[in-house]
Figure (cartoon, rainbow, N blue to C red):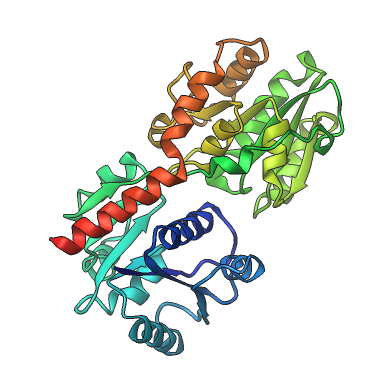
Length: 349
């Protein structure tokens, strides 16, 4: 069995981490795997830096580019894969032209609807759609025959480290943490407004915001408008997010839409922290409310403020055992094996 993965992403996000983890896991399990990624992307740069085996690149000029298609075709002809696994929308178009000679897989990581023409022309030849949440699968099965759910994983060993309190440089403080893009769907404005509601009652609490994106400047301005800049720290995009998770007290995921299977929630749990998340359907698959985390009403800064008040008072009690029990379900060894089993089943049909 030979698996060819295609990823066209340019930045390093959760999806790129998942692709690389799967590729490495397949190789460790004795399966031939070739990772084909955008030469200008962060995934390829990471592969080069970490000397990842069987990682090739291509020049991505768009999914309709003749040059890009020619490079993909050459890789397919040389590797002769059993399965071409497409990990984003553009790669579906690039891989789709081989549907007559190869089995095609597609991983769907977001809950946004797919346009009618794309459903018919781009996705119709996919043999199996892997959805990273049951919420996404329920949408996909309305339009496609072959769907399954494999949640994205978290590498628990990333958090098997001592905490680094100096990352915050504020001994004695209570540290709230947000990690993620500064984009509309992530709900960063909801979190900032919620913190503004409670910060005067909690002078010992600091809100740490790790990430960058289109709304970074706007959110920085909002922080000053709400006069919470003395208790809020902006870090921009960071690669050492493990230190932030391990040194925090509460991790917050305020996403308002589009969430597939939140890596932030799983990473917060893997670090053994209390996680507060919006009650999106996909988040409910990861958080059992008041058992291994706390949910608040989506898009409501008032609800989030009330939930923060509860968490800061120690209510409800969330045991480390319940956190570990939940996050162990998403250990990468489990999800890699689920992929292997699915590959075999599909090829044997």
